Length: 194
Image (cartoon, rainbow, N blue to C red; front, side, top):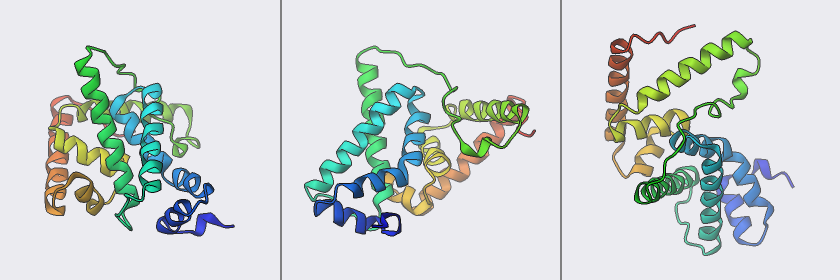
């Protein structure tokens, strides 16, 4: 059966009806976006793996219990679950006095970099690292919209749904985030071109 041609809702319906292969297709379809979003937030591949697994365990549990009711909005729903688990991790982390790694070396697992030269990859990694560090200077809601849009690949409609704000608010947060990033680049004299 050609599951890759199924819509998300068709896969969900088939999974709920007992076709276990369908959940694998859904996970494969969105794993890169979900995992990248988690990793960029927690900055630790081991923790990101755990949160990623927990995300899809919650997804499967919710689908089995038939509590998923957001037809046509599967990815934003999954991203909201991942986002909530990331928040839970940081709450637990803060409450237990744990520290987390600030390593960015695992973040750049992009196939788009595979055809470039070693020098190009080093420059791109440095640019990516500089921009990623700048995100930490943004207000939380601006950082969130950047992460969901550029690292999660979500549309502004999906971001609005996932964060429970209007599309205009999501767009406004992105606009202010970009303005703030430009200001930070100038202040810190960062060169973002090869």
